[in-house]
Length: 509
Image 1 (tube, one colour):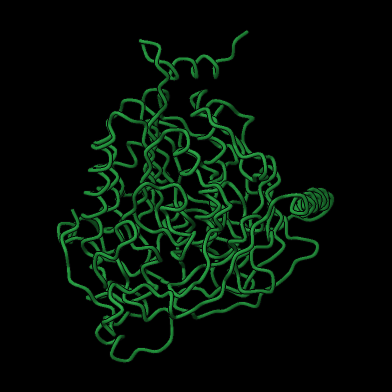
Image 2 (image 1 turned 180 degrees about the vertical axis):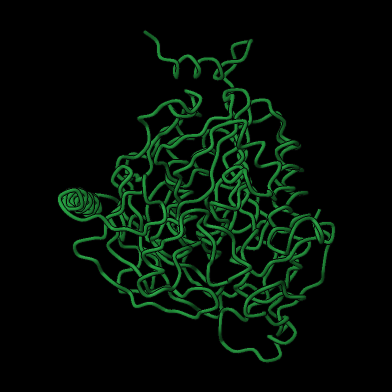
C-alpha cells in the first residue's frame, strides 16, 4: 500500500505537464525571540504578531521545537548545517575582529540547494565570519544584504534602546580602545560595505525591499531566501511608522518584524512556497524589560538555587525552546499543533528530503528528516527525536559540550548556573550535576521539581548512554576546526583611509 506521505510527495513533485516542481523556500529566523513572543503560542494574550499567527495557524505549529544552541553563532551554524558545534567547531560567538568563521568544508543548506538549481539569498544577521572562506557568498548564497554580526557588537548613530544604554558612534570612536565592540556596525551588500555605521531604524525597510526584489527576480526559478532578522536583539530600534504600533519598544519591534514577514511571504504568494519560521534562541534575560517572553518555560529550579538567568545562553527550556512553525499552503491545511520533539538541526535533512537532494556522506548529522510530519499534515506522531542533545554555552572550560539531554519528555541536566540574570544582579556559580537533575517536562514545564528514585536513575542512565554514543561518533566524523583568534586588521572598515571607518549614506537599491 502506498503511504500518504508518498502520495503527497507525488502530488507536489510534478506539475500538470509533467515537469518536476520543487517548492520555493523561505526560512525566517528571529533573533532572541522567546517562545511566548509568538501570539499563536499564547492566544489568550494580546499579540504583536498577527501575520505570523495566521501563518502558523495555516500549517504545523511546533510546541516542542529547539534551537541547536542557546546563543547566536552556534545556533546559526547548527541551523545551516544540521550539525552540532562539536562537529562544526563553531561553539562560541564570533566578533568583528574574528579571524575565523564557519569552516569552508561545512556544507550549508544554501550550498546544497544552490547545487540543486535554486537561486539563494541571505538577509540580515550572518554572524559566521567575514574573512576569506567564511562569507555568505562562499557558503552557497548568491547574494547577501545585512549587518553580519549581532547588532550590539558595535556602535550606531543614533544608538537604539539597550540596558545599559549604548553610546553613539561619535562618542565611541572619539574614545576608542582596542575592543572589537568599538566597531561602527557596517551594512553589507554582498562583499561591499554600503555604509558605516548602519542606521538601525531603517534596517527593516531595506531588508524588506531587498527580499521583495529577490523574490520578484526569481519567480520562474525555485528560490531559497534565508531571512535572519536583526529583530529583536538589543539595541532595539524600528522605523517611525511603528512608533505606536504596540505597547512598548520591544513589542513595536516584534510588530515590525511581523510586517517584514508579511511583505516577503505575500510577495512570494501561496503557490508552492514553504515558509519555516523559528528563533535562533530564547530571550536575553540580562536585558530585563527589553527581553522577550519564555512563556511557561521559566527554569524555576535555577531561580530557586542561586538565581541568575534561565533563558538565552542556558540549558533551561527558556534558552532553547523557541517558537516555530511550517506553512506550506499547497500541502498543509492547518491549524495543526505538533507536540513532537524537533529541532533547528532538522531543517537541513528535512529540506534536503523535500527537494530530493542527498546529504553529503562524509559528514554525520545531528538533525533528522521530519518530512513525514510535514507531508502527513502534522499528524505523524513518531518522527520526532527520541533523544535530543543541548550544548552548554555558559562560561566554563568546555564550551559546546553537551550539558543537557532530552529523553522523550524527560530532560537530564548536567550543567547549571554561570549566567547573569536581569541587569547582571545575580551571577550564580557554574555547577556540574553528577548524577544529573532530571525533570518530567510533561508535568513540570517550569523545571522546578527534579525527579528522585528509580525513574530518575533510569532516565539518567539513558542520557549518559546518549552522551557516550555522541562522543564515540565524533571520533569517526569529519569534524571541523575553527580559528577563534582575533586581529584588529580584519575589523570591517568601509575605507581604510578614514580613521573612524565612516562612509557616506548611499541608497541601496
